[in-house]
Each structure stands twice: as C-alpha cells, then as structure tokens.
Image (cartoon, rainbow, N blue to C red):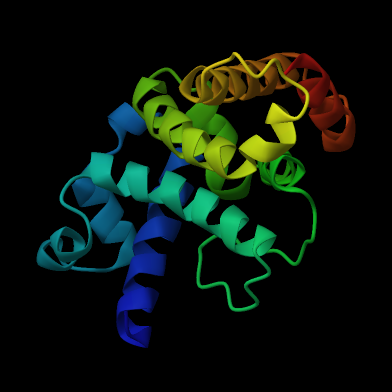
Length: 182
C-alpha cells in the first residue's frame, strides 16, 4: 500500500472510530463515515466492501499490531500505535484500557455481536501463536482446537468481567487472573 492509500485508509478509520465514540455501530452510516473522512464513496468502497468489512479490518489491525510488536517488528504501519515490549495478552489489555479507537464501545455496545465474532476469530489466531505457553500447564489429552477455543472464550469473558467491574484493576493484575483461569 502506498503512502496515499495508507493516509486515506487512516482517515476512514479515524472517522469511523470518532463516530463510534458518539453512536452505536448499527447507527453509523457509510455516508457519515465518508463525510467525516472527506473521501468519496468510490474511495471508501475501494478500501472496504461494506461498513462490516471496515469493522473487521479494525479488529484485524489491532491483532496484527500486537503480533508485529511481539515479533519485534519495528515499523508498525497500523492504526494502533505504541512502543511496548509487553507480552501479547498484556499488550491487548493495555490497548483496551486506553480504549484505543473506541474498542470498549465496540466490546460493550448494543450491536457488538459482529465485532465480538471478528474479535474472537483474531483472538483464536493469537491463542494459536501463544499455545506452547499454555500447553505446558495442561493435560496433553486436551485437543488443540478445544484449548484454543477455551483460551479465546476465557479472554473475552475476562475482558467483560474487567469492563463490568469498571476496569478498576490494572491490566497486569487482570492478565495474571486470566493466566490463572486458563
């Protein structure tokens, strides 16, 4: 992707996340996104097939950033930016705590099922990459796919618990609880 395309894509993401701070996902229209991003309809559709695809890409951007950071990639070209060397699940909780790109609104909003589905898909991929650290503590009879699903579901429920508790605990403590539960 060239610089101009990245800039346009970033403008669309910024417009979308700004709208998410004010409205539920289901109430946001493509027209509002393109007006706020100051791009044409054809430009929007050149980057994203639908508003749902934009939501999926937002989720993929988050996990791609986290995986790149864990792999020591120095040049992030993601909408999520930070300079961290935290373990992947702590890194993810840190972004949630900062509410980067209105992630909490997506996780706790009225119409969050679509985002949760995308989030869980990416979380499964992340769990697959981190599986060796979990398998060492588990019974070897557990099927790999069961363990991945368990990790993803436990993470999502841990996030829900933390958000419902007002995010009073620091991410480090919540991640510790998560590891103890898995």
